[in-house]
Length: 413
Image (cartoon, rainbow, N blue to C red; front, side):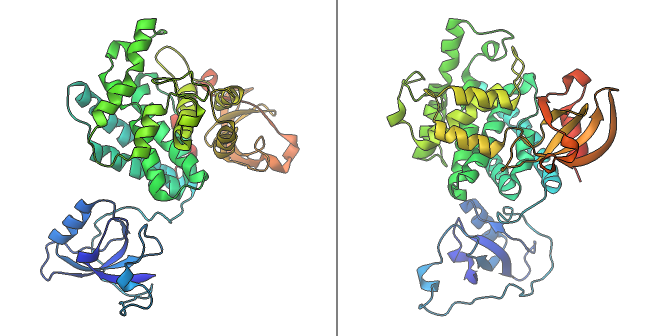
């Protein structure tokens, strides 16, 4: 339902469909739509002379105010095709209901990923120098990730497969936020909760900024003393987040317990299953999976299937009901995975298959026998075409293939 409201009635959680009226002579004419996430946005609209807006309560995360509900005084209800002036837009937040193709969203997602990685790298340096956590920056990154996931989760999912051992720490934070958002959406959490869970995942390793750089970048396994220093990142992170805005009790519980295990063998407190929330169990699964498929300074990452098998084998450590659903969510061969086929070809997985996960849709692009690229062609392996099957997934390194370059080549419109 579209309802016209005064700017004085605008609240966070409302979805602005458009601006109806602005003070005469305002320097910037606003025509925009999007979710209001922060009171600062409302203050900005006030400063720019906005007087009246149209709110789409079908997309809002708050209920229609009581005085505007049916049976109360008549409200100004607008038809969807009402005309508005064409002026330059001022961005609020993307339409959470808008859907996009994988190719359309990959351009947005990859730009967001690279920019966010740079921001996290700079923030880590600031934190190690004693500066405070920039929660506004981190909230914006988490919101951008969630907005992308709700438009098309496959685009962000493909980016979690990229590897770079030199940027493991902040890439891992990003990947955990992405995978948590994807999994939470898959499990049916509403968007507000997904945003909180994604932000908690982005923050879960923030304490690593206070761990000595020599420990973080050591090109070999850590000593017992170094492991103890590393494990302090949980407590260090909590102390850095005390009193910060945007942090809920659920988020803190996820952050402090993401290394706890069902059998009580985790840290920092050795909690057992009955003390661990569903959200903390989700982050524990995501954290281990993301760490296993990534390149670290001392170790190359595994293929996703190997990480999923590990999670399945550790019944005493991880919630197996959630592990099973996580596997269905990300897929045995996640979008963007490079796979060997039985016809001596390499292909990229471009669409999953929930009914038959080992037979997704793939894009064939490389001849492994003659080691050269071929004209790309999409094949639906579930159709049984020439009985082509996947032999195994691969990083492509044996053919000197760069996954980042391949993703751009095959997923950008």
